[in-house]
Amino acid sequence: MFTGIVQGRGSVTGYRSVRGGQALDIDADFVIDNPEEGESIAVNGVCLTAYNISGRRFTADVSPETLSRSTLGELRVGRSVNLERALRLCDRLGGHIVSGHVDCIGRLVDIGREGDFTILSFSVPAEQDTYIIEKGSISIDGISLTVNQCGGGRFSVSIIPHTMQTTTLGALKNGGAVNIEVDIIGKYVEKLLGGKDGSPDQAIEINRGYLAEKGFF
Image 1 (cartoon, helix red, strand yellow):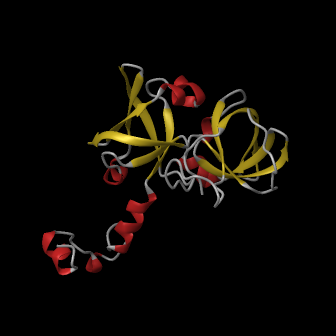
Image 2 (cartoon, helix red, strand yellow):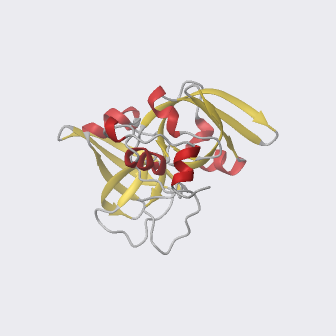
Image 3 (cartoon, helix red, strand yellow):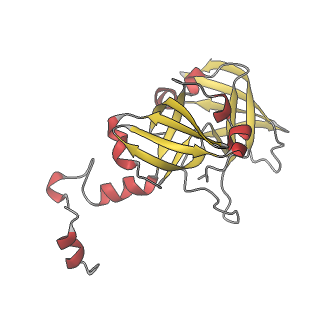
């Protein structure tokens, strides 16, 4: 489990095929203190298992499923990635609950400015649009951000100068691909109410009458 608060960046130093997937060698820009072999590290928002951890360096395998659902297959030696070690129970939850399980690939469609802030707009597949809400949380390449506006398979976020300087967003160009993880709470609520992947016969229509029956009014 992660928070979407990026700890630093890493550089890909090795990328090779292994057992049907890929293996990444990464050199972080921070020391991985008190490492645990096999711990989880989010790489551009993708939860990976780190091994051969030494100082700032580690290796992680990427499964065929992960390659098909994320941008990790596009990484090459020298590429910069966002890194976050797994959340500890004693840590501050500064972002939002991020699982590191990517839902889809989004693409940057517009870059704007509002004073010192950068406004980035992304497109996402239509089936993910329902999980993105105005002022809700979203993870982009492992960065916890707040949605400004959304609808029609697009959404925008406002990026502060610090985030542009310390993450890979500063190098993103129009058309660039990013890993998107929508807010996991919405997906659980939908499943519990019999929506997507639930039984149609058990679907519940949430309206004023239903809420009144359950004591919300």
